Image (cartoon, rainbow, N blue to C red; front, side):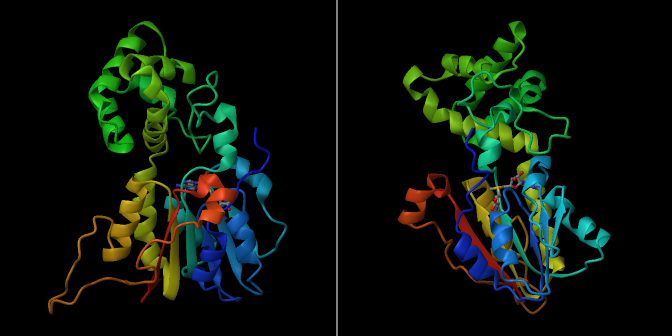
Length: 301
Ligand SMILES: C[S@@+](CC[C@H](N)C(=O)[O-])C[C@H]1O[C@@H](n2cnc3c(N)ncnc32)[C@H](O)[C@@H]1O
């Protein structure tokens, strides 16, 4: 296992673009290894930072800083949690989506196809009920095909779903090697490796209901941010990025531009990054896992 918990992507850009006020209240919606949080804390004097993460393992990264509060919950519960802590408005929200290195590099979490003997788990929240093995053993063929097609953008989604069903008639799908075996019936041997990231992405999105939670979270940020407060989001694949882009462009996750009676557009945001910021070649060289990061920022009007 890699001993580094996580290396935060685009850290300098995130901090600059959050435009931190030393006495402001900020949310790191995806605390993880706390790399972004520590950088935010360096800019606070009397302010406050609330760090959300649904993964209990992140508890060990809590900084010894009285300005920081760790909240072990899904970021889609942001409004409820902030209200519980007596906070109605914040000055900035950062979300660095996806999985941490720790999750990816810990065999038993089941996020990486490198660990053939690991169980197909893929839960970020270890208290939730649904695992990837359950998805593969219990979902209908049609449902599985949709997940592979829409969340993994896999063209042979139907064929893959068919072989999942055939396999599980005889053997319970439990370990990553079961899934690798199934892939052997669907893809040419030399191409299997190139399909695995998409297949794993699809299952991970379903297990963690990632897109639904992201949409719910984004929709709540509009009311939570003070005027001039910023929303800073890093996404790592096109499905997430499309949702973030639509939301920032239109104020809703469908991306529909709404107009008032006079024909004026009803967008609560000023766009700060006309195009997404991506890592430099130097950052990608030092941290190859940052290569798909896309950073988008808006400011509440
Ligand atoms: C890419 S890592 C963030 C790393 C962090 N920025 C750092 O500097 O270490 C993503 C983290 O967000 C958490 N996460 C992902 N989706 C979440 C959600 N819907 N609610 C709460 N935490 C979530 C994951 O458990 C993971 O720890």
